[in-house]
Amino acid sequence: MNRFDYVKPASIAEAIAAASQPGAAYLAAGTNLLDLMKGNVVRPSRLVDISRLPELNRIERLSNGDVRIGALVRNADLAHDPAFANDFPAVAEALLSGASAQLRNAATVGGNLLQRTRCAYFYDPASACNKRTPGAGCDARDGENSQHAVLGWSEACIATNPSDFCVPLAAFDAVVEIERKTGKREVALEALHLLPGTTPERETVLEPGEMIVGIRLPAAARSFAKHARYLKVRERTSYAFAVVSAAAGLIVENGAIKQARLALGGVAAKPWRAREAEALLAGQAAEAGAFQRAAAAALAGAKPSGDNAYKIPLATNLIVRALQAAAQGTPDRVPALPASPFSSVPVSSVPGVLHHA
Image 1 (cartoon, rainbow, N blue to C red):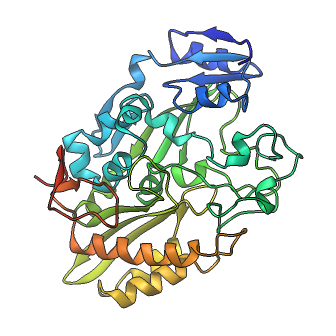
Image 2 (image 1 turned 60 degrees about the horizontal axis):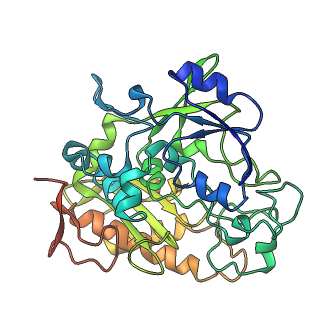
């Protein structure tokens, strides 16, 4: 590991000033950043430790009905918050399906938004990777790429975003609050991450020194709570990133879909909001035919980036399963195997994690 300066600011303003210097990086829990530093994948010259800033560690119910989540709230604390899990069950299920319990107890929601791709070539400094070294090339294009993107990829990069949490956030119109030297700005979660194009090294819209301070879920997202699910296909049921995943939410009245929300994970460099599919579902009966048409629309632009053509029918089928699960209704408790399509609901459950008591 290279030498670096360590700064522990006492306020958000001090943190932003320190992190605006070239080569600086924010440190929260470090569950991704420290691994990257140990592997010589990233080499920050300064770490700005924001882990003790108290104003970033709160879950707040705002007067307009929105819920604001501070960037330093732990993944486990948010998922196990009874009121939050009741109002946003698909988000809680996504959180509980990610990593291990130990990592969820440490990792922060702000860090989750900014975690880097798990592409093996990105993690290997001996491999060519445009994301790590602009202009170096992409060894994944002709390498082991069965896990890579089928939507929004380019010849410069075919990596995927690894986050579970971000998928339902994109589906339910979450907003990211960002602090900078000149004040605060807000960005829709759906617009936070960038597709690779010719500049895959730029992964988000964040400018140097800008800090994510919170995430806000709108009050309207609660309308989907009775019919919301997150499903995830992975190579093993626990402690694995998604091969493909889907967050689905429905508002159902008299057997017909009034509104739908749908987003995919594991298929692109960003959480993929399937707006065309949502529009197709509006006004349709909540039945298999409508779900199949929506799934086809969501994957209409998909194409393999290598040995991953299987992802397209897999994602198509998972969308149908997620919509069917949402239509059946949110279970009272998160399943014992959160987000697994093979979980038996509600035969067993995770103690203390209620959706609808």
